[in-house]
Length: 88
Image (cartoon, rainbow, N blue to C red; front, side, top):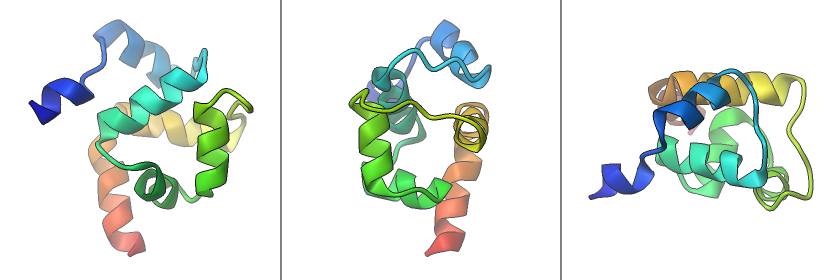
């Protein structure tokens, strides 16, 4: 059941892998797809939880290097989880 709850449609994942984040809901869906809490996802990609919350709530949009990190997360979620293990 946990995997089903984390699933995102293939068309959305392809869009995210291309770096086309249309809303904060896309960032939140990606984080859930990777399977991490806000705190752990922020730690894994090297940003503050505050920044992640701003993205997810639509107050700010990721740009530049952040988009690159989010594209990697969409393409290789396992690497993001592994990066968290090495960050701890």
